[in-house]
Length: 380
Length: 219
Image (cartoon, rainbow over all chains, first blue to last red; front, side, top):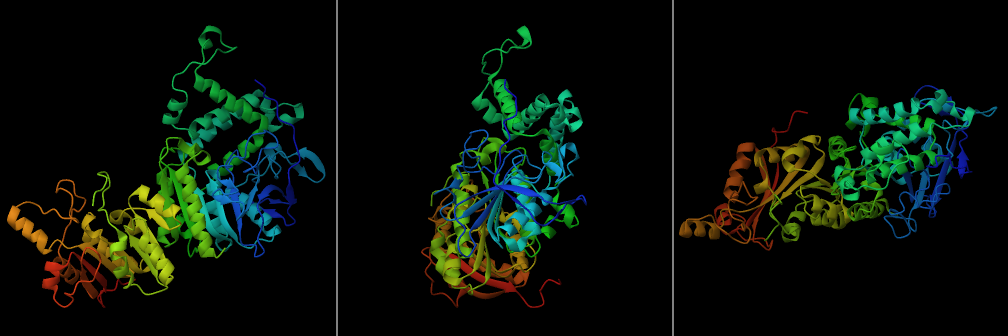
């Protein structure tokens, strides 16, 4: 299976003029944020919607990906006449800090003078750091208040951080299939993935680019493990069951026959390593693991949202066991404690965590209705 | 009114007593509607009175419809979720035709008057003459358009009469600022001054309550 990285290309980006102080104490200069926009910013600059992507997503939310050729990851939700209607809203999506699709991250040059990438030495970043970088981008675009910030999974974590850090800059917040902290179980799954990367002989202590290799096996296993957590038992049974599909070129008789689910995961792993940087994966999974919004506010999640005037829509999916409904309900209760304006639904789906990326008509209708109602309230 | 058996709360058409409830709400106020159904009252209060009105509804499918309609509604349970709200967060907390279906009506009322300055409560009156008559004549649990489910499957586990409710308000120290009886169509019934008659002829009771002075919580 082809595991060679796809060629690097130039992404639309903006160099942030101000230094970016990170939670770890290090200050990053000359941060670059790669981003895409869809639709037109209105004269009042009041119709901007920021989409925050998940762990392995990127800024190509509603267009064919220039590297992989795949459709935009949320092209069911973002576009003309869709819930995030690009005829009506100015949609922005930025590659996260630490990412590998053009924004400053482990693959970026360490500083202006060194062509050598940061690699494993890239400073540890947090979800809040990602959000601060996005805020700088929004400032550069001269947008004072976002009409809405929306994202699923790690994107939802960013939405929560946005609402906590910049309450006056967020009119409506839509944290989808997410949690206010990363659970022990989720950290555990991430750690399995990271160990697979770190244990790959081609990892070369994080300096794999020097030898012109990538820890493809390790990164693929990390992706395979993670991918299982994005699905559900019901979805796997429905899609693959115990179906046998072809043979394998390794292992002789023992692997003479392969389950369809095995081939599927293998494909997920190998296509992933072609587009994603291993050090980025380490960096971003770490940021997710350390996310605990309440911890920044004396252990009280409600305190993170004190006096908030932001309108919230929380959405969870019934078969999502990675970010179960209970996590969204905990956020809802914290928001109730500060009498915030909240809408909260659990969408019935058997597709697991991935449901937020898939065709779920109730989910689309919910987002569309919430945004339409919020637009009336915001006067846009 | 027929209703899918898995749904716990009584079916209701918010439009029936929407006008009567809305008439008790001052403009530009903060309102929480518990058991808001499809959110018709919230929408009405937002559109006609400029209220910051929000809802809680237990039925997820109904919540999804309400949110998809652009209304701020969260899935939640009156019996368990009110305790998360801060004191005095709302000017009005509304419980329309839901009191008889909650597990702990007295606690729900206490929570309503903790988080809201005023509570508006409506409920179908079990003291209506037709119910009394059926019980007297047939010796079986009454069945009417409102009380349409057999006793073993009704979601209305705490039926009460208008007089019962007056007694509870007194025991709990709530001041009844306004009350009225209405027929099933939501028209105001004319027994305003005579609770005994209202209890006999009113198909539903509607109350505007606040904590009696001196009963204010200390914080």
